[in-house]
Amino acid sequence: MQEFEEYLTSKKIDPSAFKQGDPQLWESWVQLFSEVHPKSFTQQKLFLINPMRRKYPLSQEAAVAQSKPSSPKPKMKIPIRPIKKS
Image 1 (cartoon, rainbow, N blue to C red):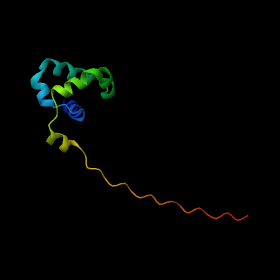
Image 2: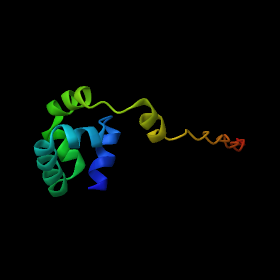
Image 3: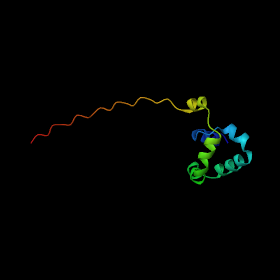
Image 4: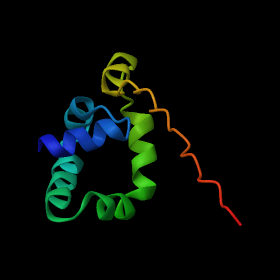
């Protein structure tokens, strides 16, 4: 179930509000999510995720806590090409 809550958080849906607001739909989604791959679940519920996101939005504090700090990109050195002698 923790994976499902993390999935909802990644889709910017508040899991606790969703669970309290619509427990029957919550249970059916948890059941389906446990049976299929997350990408398959997304494909099956694609047109239902946005309405749930609008109905149970994730709070700003939770969204900020969920976002990962970006790490600096490593600098790549361009290799020196050997000079061809003719």
